[in-house]
Amino acid sequence: MRPFRIAFPDEALTDLRDRLARTRWPAQLDVGWSRGVPVDYLRGVVDYWLHSYDWRRWEARLIEFPQYLTEIDGQTIHFLHVRSKDPSALPLLVTHGWPGSFVELVKIIEPLAESFHVVVPSVPGFGFSTPLSEPGWNHHRIALAWAELMRRLGYSRYGTQGGDTGSVVSPEVGRVDPDHVVGVHINGGLAFPSGDLTDLERERLAFAYEIKETGTGYADLQSTRPHTLSFALNDSPVGQLAWIIEKFREWTDPARELPEDAVDLDLLLTNVTLYWLTGTGATSAHLYYETRIDNPDLSPSGVPTAVAIFPTDPAIRRLVEREHNVVRWTEFDRGGHFAALEAPDLLVEDIRAFFGALETSQC
Image 1 (cartoon, rainbow, N blue to C red):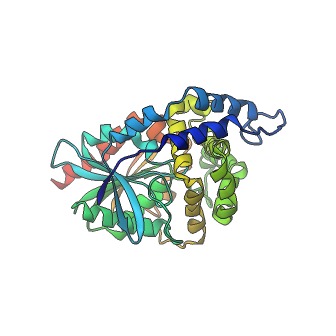
Image 2: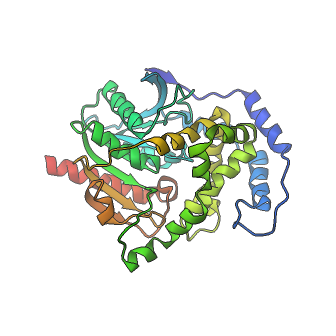
Image 3: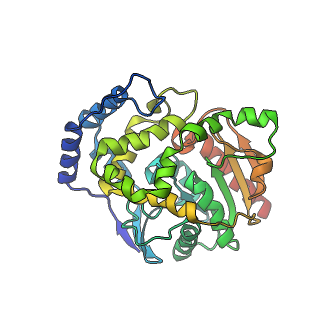
């Protein structure tokens, strides 16, 4: 393991600004968001990105978190490791999702570090866990790598947490390392329940099924043709921005009209800028390809699991219990899929309560 410090050269930022200034804007129909990101809206965001947003300010903020690189199973793994002031604190492994990165967790890392030793790895192909070494980095392989990372850090007993991709990887860590994982906390799952649903359950899931019907084209492309998509994402920062910001509009709290109403625009742009500067819009897409061809074992691990449900989460407890040993189920009336950015206070409180109860029961 070796220390790592974020340091992009000025030339990379100059190139970004030049590309933004030379954007060739498409002609569009006046149909709002119904066919994707409206050009007039995106022009405003790009104007802010070009003239007001300050990457160096946010880079300095990210550098405050101790970061490291290591190699596991032939893959470079980047991770944050923020130790609690309490040496006896429980280690907590937190996994981000797509189209996020470790940036989406910056609001919860320090609050969590009051109670946990916090470990935040970047998923292979995302951020600084690059280059993507080879095919095959599916959820199971990531979980094995995370278990090895915690072993190398000297943690023989730890919890896991995650949203989106993390809501799949975190329970999988419990399956591959059940002797050391004391509990799993998840939010922001993307499964769409089917089968024998009640009328009330169908009504509750109407929003999720609308997204499934009209908003999953991104997943079809990333899971079948990530290389073809990569040329657009790797050559156009505005293309990368549109690809990500659409999801922040669709998956955030439905009570919020625009992405920046739910998530701080500077943090959203920091996440997008990280994708651009690391060139990982393309490599992160491969996770969807691996997921499509994977055949995971979703049997319950037996590890106690907590599920935090936010307004956009398509989850029914009796169905979730088929794959998880659910011992805590909490439903919130604000926030959305990106809970760590939208409702960090609620998420942190629920994580603390779950693991606090586990620790108390085991004393």
